[in-house]
Length: 142
Image (cartoon, helix red, strand yellow):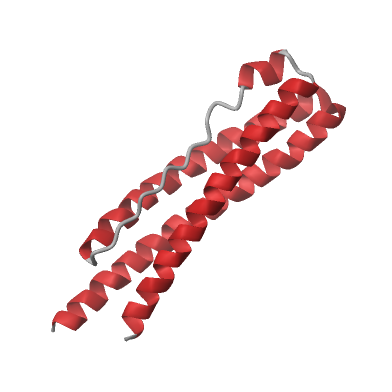
């Protein structure tokens, strides 16, 4: 009976982890798109490319907030099986004012660095969630 109960709890944690992983991947993809627009912006794309880039960043922030909620749920479910998850993933403000009103190479470069940093943080989060999920899958299979 105990094994079946723990298996059920592990499966609930897996489900929550998979949702969190999908959320992190969605935010990462949106940031990738923002980064692509950022490169275009650095090459002289102008106001339109800055606008699209910032739009993609705003969308990524929304997706990341959803992923954070899913990660919080994953953390709760992990506690039921004796696991922990301690991730801090932030996007930041991306120097929006400077990007629009001081539109130039330096501002574009700084924004591009922020995008890159955020993507790296998300990739680290994805790695950790995958590792925990792999452990949970092993527990369920036993």
